[in-house]
Length: 253
Ligand SMILES: C[S@@+](CC[C@H](N)C(=O)[O-])C[C@H]1O[C@@H](n2cnc3c(N)ncnc32)[C@H](O)[C@@H]1O
Image (tube, rainbow, N blue to C red; front, side):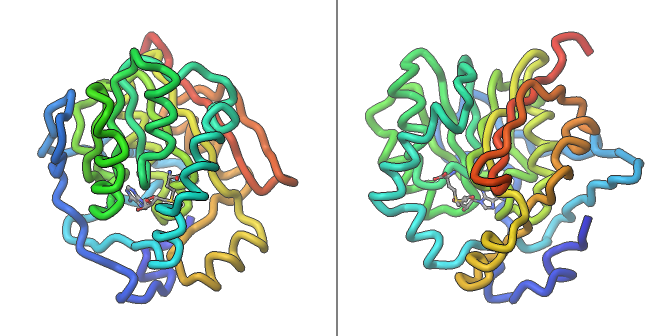
């Protein structure tokens, strides 16, 4: 596990102040929580998850990648990718999306499942605005600004947490897994996909200058284990470059 963003040499121009913890600006089904959060991450094993500290800055995607994520072609593709990304796992109940970007996948989920109540979140306020516009037609969906590593939601308040192609931008992605697990109800599931470390993915992100930390092959499963999530499905695609996962919080703890 590497150091923080500074330790990895990220340019300060790529960083912005972290948003305050309780920044939910839409119709949240859960009150935002201003208290402590990551005390559950006293993992103390060989695979230690580092904690963010108040006031630390958060890496930001490059303008190029951010605009790509908001583009019409990507939105179209992202919408179509939901069944593949979720491996057919039912996305039900109270759903939280972390790093939801433009809200394209959130829109596809609520369109396919009108009975879900969905909150999509992103650290980038511009993305949140785009997602709010995208979801305006859906009364049971909302978009709010939140850092995935310090979610402003109560413990055990969601049935499903979805994470699509965002963990590698979080840098300390383990924290997002910790937080995803914290806000999941017993029996709830963390579902998503992300890039695994590969030469191609590193080159693309370096060329584009987006801060990133790709997940090393084999690094994801121990983190799930440490936060108490049980792996239901793990698939490698595109020659082992993409990881799809479904992990469940045990119903009885
Ligand atoms: C590659 S985009 C993917 C967006 C969307 N999930 C999709 O598939 O279209 C990654 C997203 O993660 C967001 N992000 C990066 N770090 C984050 C963090 N710490 N908390 C929440 N969102 C974050 C970025 O702002 C960006 O919108």
